[in-house]
Length: 131
Image (tube, rainbow, N blue to C red; front, side):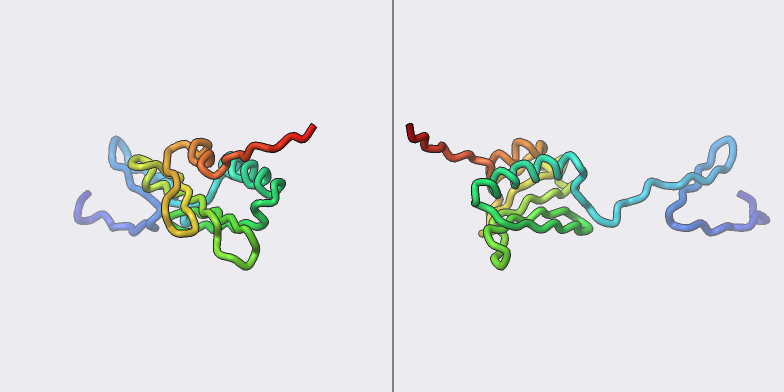
């Protein structure tokens, strides 16, 4: 770049590549908030639906934040969450992106696979069969 060339300012979402020719390419967008995708919600809601059918849970809330997504499960609407299912992508290479947190704040299960993490709260009780 010579001193006679004008310097053009580009918006922050662009990269300038220098090679055989100068090109402007849009940089990948950083998500402004983390959310559960359709497959993850399907797995979570199938566990939630079984527990609602058993009468154990009654309400839920979904929260999408900048650093994590949270699915909160309530026994009654006016209470604190019984469990929180959290997705934190920044932990995906360390302990796993998914975790189940109890009402006390203790992490019940953490891992890379959502189905394995959900098994911690999807314990099925044996049913009594009366003949």
